[in-house]
Length: 298
Ligand code: TXA
Ligand code: MG
Image (cartoon, rainbow, N blue to C red; front, side, top):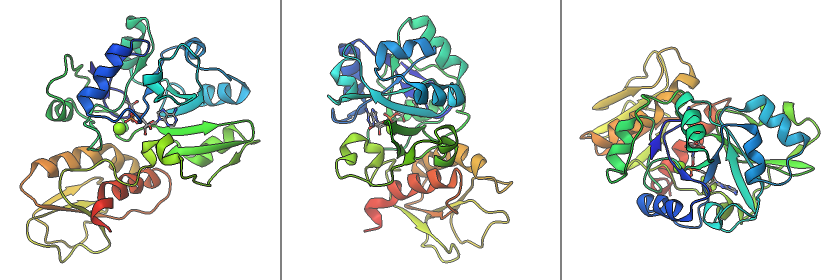
């Protein structure tokens, strides 16, 4: 069943039912090496899923849950290997959406859910986006638009360091404040690409070429333009998506995937997006744009 969370729509199944979990991979055409996030509604459910629940984990949960933070922890043996792609760790979060929380509680089990899109393509922030990419699924819970519009921040912690595996609404600085004794680990290991495909260079693709640009006044005919500025920079684009009227990047993040979906559906043949400054949520926005444009930027 697809259901809304505050970040994006998820495609959920009982986290302890390997057959239902296999269906998620099949529907998304998702490779088995890409592990799923388990969603819980009560802190006490964390014990069903993970080991190593210490003061640091409880501090993060206390500060950011329910909310857009996914924590990677040592896995309990009971968690099926298909959820974690055979890794010894498991990713967990408590979503801040009443429908998601209600669904988990009423199911009586934690729910494993990736974003409800085909692997590698745009994330869904509206029910319509799910229907477009996954018409074959059994159920879609219509909860309207997602409040944040960008996937959760993923953080892996150990006794000395923490590593951001995917940028999201919660920043490294905010996490640092809650874990003052842990150092930030910025060294990217080669194997990280396998640990978190959020770190893959190409992802979130809007089925047509996308480019990040500085100037918008001389675009090819038939282009779509994504703008983050008010007033709008001069442009000759055929279709224009203004992601924020207030110049507020949080508002832009909410609208980002919906604008990309509209341009994907439209008659433009190329999409151009303005670069934004990489502060706050701007870091996550640029991360998504770079991955969406990666194959065209070589
Ligand atoms: O906001 C979100 O996180 C949304 C909503 C539905 O909760 N979910 C989401 O799931 O974005 P998905 O599957 O599209 O992205 C999950 C990411 C993947 O990049 C996966 O590799 C990473 O989480 N991940 C899952 N388990 C992991 C683990 N044990 N270690 C490292 N990364 C992991
Ligand atoms: Mg995804």
